[in-house]
Length: 122
Image 1 (cartoon, one colour):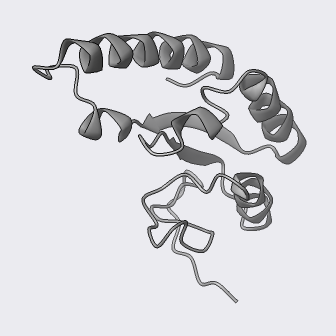
Image 2 (cartoon, helix red, strand yellow; image 1 turned 180 degrees about the horizontal axis):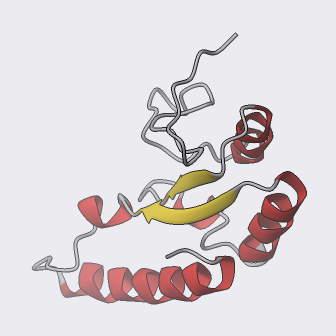
C-alpha cells in the first residue's frame, strides 16, 4: 500500500502513478485518469496537471474535448485541478531566438489559458 503524507488541505507533492516513459515529471498519457481515482481513495482534493513538450497534443489540456473530459472526472471523483506545471515551455521557451518556436509556444499558451479557465485552474 502506498504511504502518503498529506497536509490539512488534502494536498500532496509527488505522483500516485508509475513513471511515464521513465519519468515521474511527465503526463501519463494513457493512464492519467487513474490518478484521480487513487487521489479520491486517499481523500486528496487536488492534482497538479503537467503539460510536457513531448506528446503535448495527447494531453487533455490541449486535446479537443479534453477539458470536458477533465471536468467530468473531476466531478465524478471530487478531485480538482488548481495548478498546471507547464514544462512544455522549458523545451519551447517563449524567449527562443527561433521565431517559429515562439509563435507555436504563444499558441500553446493561449490554448492553455483558455483550458485553464474552463477547468477552474487558479
